[in-house]
Image 1 (cartoon, rainbow, N blue to C red):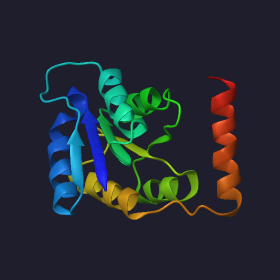
Image 2: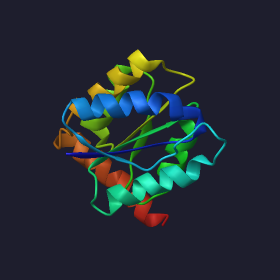
Image 3: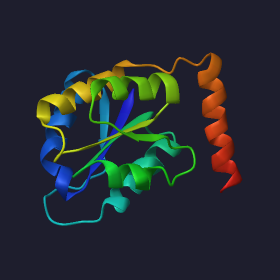
Length: 149
């Protein structure tokens, strides 16, 4: 499975730790930047990541900024992206299982390296349950998205 990862300047320090961890687990990683702590604009990197997923180059994505909030807001502007900002393992797992989220967002200023890796493991280790009310609700999300496109 291919995972795409991106960050802004506020998520740069933890991105390398997460990227190495994912590669060690056997995933192929596509890195869309940024490549330094120089101030930059998070929507640029969120869009680059989403384009890789929507274009079929990667299945899932991880976005990191200061809080994870800006990245999740930017990512969710893309039709077909379901990004969740998580700072606990339970939510990271359930957003995949229940919401079929395809992008995990978190903040370097909110979580440390240890929790970041736990979030990534929970997210990547979970699968969409694809049954019952979960299917209905994800379809409802798509309907809302299509209606407002």
